[in-house]
Image 1 (cartoon, helix red, strand yellow):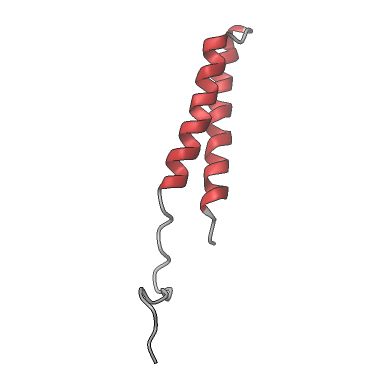
Image 2: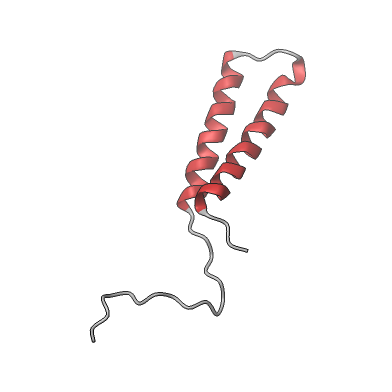
Length: 70
C-alpha cells in the first residue's frame, strides 16, 4: 500500500494535535499557552512528516535518473 506524503503528514498532524488537545483540557480549561502548544504540535508533525521521504518498495522499478537516449 502506497501512502502519499501529504496523507501521511495529515494523519500525523491530526494525531499530534489531538494528543496535545487531550493533555491540554485535563483541567477543564484551555489557556492561550495550551492553544499555542496544540498549534505547534500540529505544525511540527506536518513539517517533519512531510520532509521524511517514503521508504521505497522492495523490488519496485525506479525510473531512470537521467534522460533516455535512443
